[in-house]
Image 1 (tube, rainbow, N blue to C red):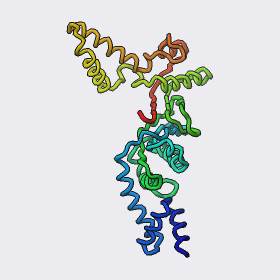
Image 2: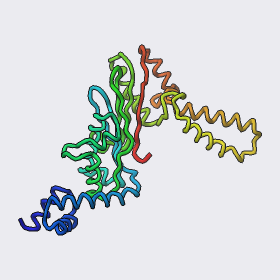
Image 3: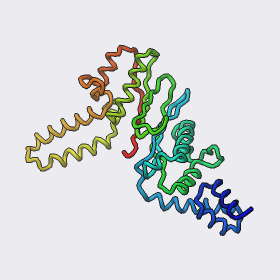
Image 4: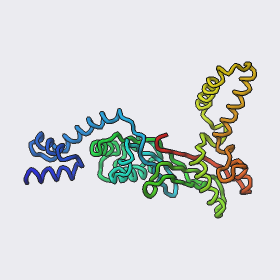
Length: 283
């Protein structure tokens, strides 16, 4: 086999560039298997250097089956790579695996993909091939048992891939078109309003603490009496809780009503919003 043919074969097997393949073959004295190992090791080294860079682009993917629905983000550095075929194919398979392991990150990284290599190994190979920092970001899985899960994509890149994705689980025994419409609208509402929790009690205390610090800083030099500052501060924190708890948010489709009012108006027995996840690339 001519050297150029070996280089072509190595490129096909590894996905690496012409120069890297040629160099690896020289180093391995023409042994393709050894050359693949050399490229793998060098790829890991290159990937490590790239991981210090910022990855604020990427895609959000949703996968589902009869038992559960999962959402996951795959990040990269540029929008150009987010539309790359290799990146998208990896993202799609990654999403299916993520759903099968219920968003367990450790299990996900060790899971063998279709080519027989682990997710972690394929991720490193993809970084080496594409030349950008690529990271697996946030993920969440919702159980479909005794509930209906609705999904929504905003700024769609390709089917089931977008820049912003939402999944929301609703407990209900109702199977009418009414609940389907509400579920779709609710997922769109979550995409637009970005709630932190379903209700006020569910908001992370750390988020409230951070908001309190911002309010204090804002009022610090106001010159108002302490008791007035405390009242203003309390009012701002209560408003923060209202605006960031899903049930208390103004319904996007009809702002005069809150989400909890819309649920009440549906008059459906035991309708409960169980859980949700909203992932937006760059946030």
